[in-house]
Image (cartoon, rainbow, N blue to C red):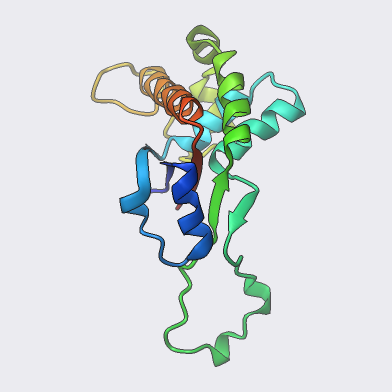
Length: 179
């Protein structure tokens, strides 16, 4: 198994349930849809950022790493590991999200990137050289049962664009979980 990034669409009205109870808001009950990027999200981020100015590159980063969150960020440097309660939850994370205006801005940016441009920017040798996760697995094979190649990443790109188009058209928030 490896890391994945999951993006969840959340209606504006349901977003307030998260604010009220960030530790137990019933994600599966309130999500309007989701998209999972298994091991491919860092490659998507890298390829999509190629050739962009800093402002737009920062927008691409917000897809998987929103700056806004609800809940408490754990500061491991301040945790006294010798005096922790037995039930301390190391997995507890804040809920990272992007609000509808950011969703719209990201969606508009993704719309300016054509499939041809994305495919031209995809270079598996560069991804491996730059040690983009998952390291040393990017390839030029195009068989249907192969991943981490131009065919696979083109599908991931299309799924990402579709997710943002839907989220934007519905005026929704989205939550991002990477792990």
